[in-house]
Image (cartoon, rainbow, N blue to C red; front, side, top):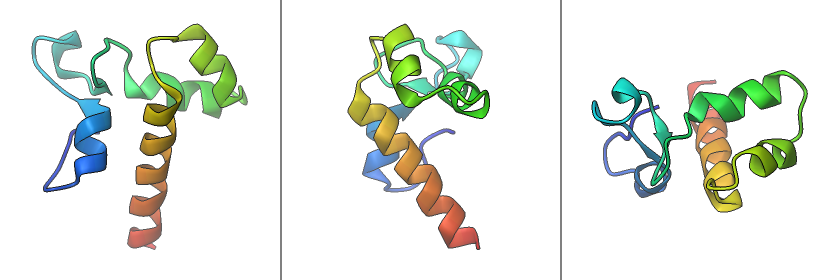
Length: 77
């Protein structure tokens, strides 16, 4: 999920660069793909497990990403 427009929340949480994992969206300041959190949640794992396994990602980053996804989903509904 690359940053768009003037959305400061997404810009501070997610980044995408051809130099980092070939442009895969990652949590800012890390090489942890955003999709990894979604994979954990889809498998039924709690957010805590993802954070334990990816300690470089801050809780605030994960929460901000999930809130942004929720807002986008709600706006599309």
